[in-house]
Image: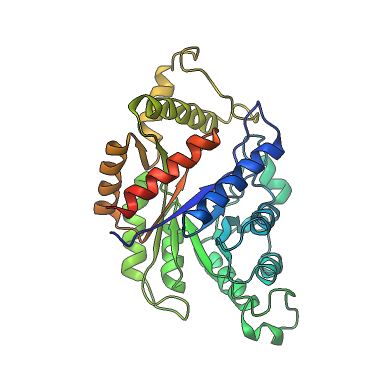
Length: 331
């Protein structure tokens, strides 16, 4: 467990009392922190039609982060393939790889990752398990050394060989990742009930490939850690408010910073949602978070954990990941 890698997933949260530029600057500050503290990678997720998260033009954001860091691996966590053609993805990420060699990751998901109205505007294709595997193979072909033999080849893109990670929140993508011999990143932060089943499928069915000889699991989880009980309780309150904002989808507005002393009392339905649907988490005080981390490792044994959070204060945000790194590296 001491060799477990640690990474960061950022949805670029936007709060009502800040500009979009300030939200992007916070994301860059966290990327620089990740680089300085030797995190394995820093991913940005694609989402659409909400002012609360700003990762819609994912590759553009990645270019900004790559241009303002020196060695950090930066990537998509991920590209939602129904919104793009494999050829377009090969061109865009081939371009990033040409500009920033050896620093670009490409996580690819099977779902559109947005609401139905938005999906109708940007939707390109539907992917069942079989067609998703075919599309990923095609994407690999576009970025291979042999792509120059294709009738139409992406340029940049030929020979880019950007590492592909299969994203999933159910067992369907586990089968695909295993079949193609690709690393598998499971979204435990919003689909906790399927983790064990999906990882078991992936590990048992894994076929070695040119890019990967043994299964490699990245496990996504939420993290809100603080040094004191009081600070941890405040992070937990804000995390619950963000979670309710996301699941209700009642408002497309930015996240609202709420004073715990002035917040309305949760309804019974909201309390039920928080109990039943909160994702996998390593949160709380240092001792609580350490116990949770050990439990995650015992149950799922990921090769890497990738933490997501919506903490708005830059200092608390970095402290959260610093504490997480200390727990993982000193276990």
